[in-house]
Amino acid sequence: MDNTEKVWKSINGGIAAPKGFYAAGVQAGIKNKDKYDVALIFSDVQAQAAGVYTRNLVKAHPLYLTQRHLENGLARAIVINSGNANACVGEFGDKAAFAMAEVAGMYLAVPPEDVLVASTGVIGVEMPLDRVLNGIRLASSVLLNDVVKGIRGQKETSDEGAHKAALAIMTTDTKVKEYAYELPCSEGGMIHLGAIAKGSGMIHPNMGTMLGFLTTDANVPSEELQDILRQAVEESFNMVTVDGDTSTNDMVLLLANGASGVTPTGEDRTNFEKMVKMMCIQLAQDIARDGEGATKYMEVRVSGAKTKDDARKIARSVCGSSLVKTALFGEDANWGRILAAAGYAGAEFNPEMVDVFLGNLMVAKAGKGVSFSEEQAKEILSESDVLINLNLHNGEEQATAWGCDLTHEYVTINGSYRT
Image 1 (cartoon, rainbow, N blue to C red):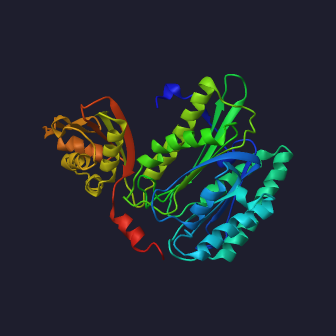
Image 2: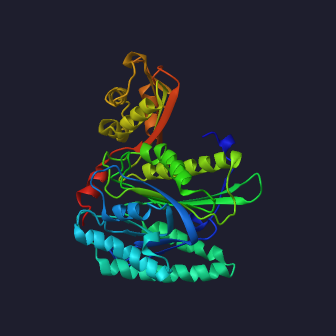
Image 3: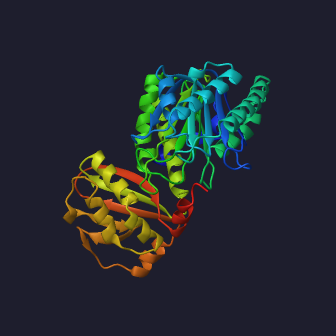
């Protein structure tokens, strides 16, 4: 999006920046005793809600529960744990997911059906439920204390809780992913949008082992919220890849509690939708930058495609190619790998018309190599951010995907993930 279209600004507060939202993160000792690993997000009034989930046929137990709880489009709270995926453990997993919702609901005085649940961590291992539930009790106590302060006009104290919630959902992430925006509306009033996300490995379109949570105080019905979220996810989380593996636990949730008193219409509605999309894109880019063991961030732009779907397929294919990713790590201007990855993407184009660029340096024209400076190419590939451009000369559509290089460190991290 062109910066001239950006009418919102960044603010503090993260996931708790919108009016009526609170968050907390605590250390429950689920896997590592010194890590924040249970997060709680709460709206002090009923919120409209929407969700988008992994397309992996193997899904985690909390994901199924959240889908059921969202059938009415309403929610009050989200409870999340890291350190254990609660996936592929049979009946125990279903009971554990419901227990998380039940305990959170009991302490927050809301029905368990209004609590959404997410987990992330090791698959196929029963979670230490007692520790998780104790963490939820502690997080509830901390959060409710912030709610009381909010009633007294001291809501800024919840900024720390929002940050700890962002820490609590991380697994192999090395960077916290949290943002908040503020959008002034033409009819008066202000809409706020907050978000946190996690993701570093097992990342691939549709989606990856990533969780994303967004809150807003705008007044938007759940059906419309679902459309807004789905479109934003298509151009953000579904355009990021780290390693080609799609997880069992992915979900992105968006809650809107209407506490701002603003129902965005006309230009305000357009700006709100753009703001949600840009928030998701910013989080997706952060996930690519934080890829496990990554040393380089890769952005692939495809232009001149016949259809948007073709552009997306090619951008994702190039980003996901192990050979492109290893060439990026080795700073090798092996442009043939880029064209080859485009060729097996399942998109329609003529290879003899494609131009390929590394940054602004043309390395192939009309599907053939051109003379270029290896030194200049090496310099471009030595940067921490590398841009790859493909012009298909086959239409007007374009798309962008994000990824990273594939390094020795990625193998080290994932070779001993359970320990």
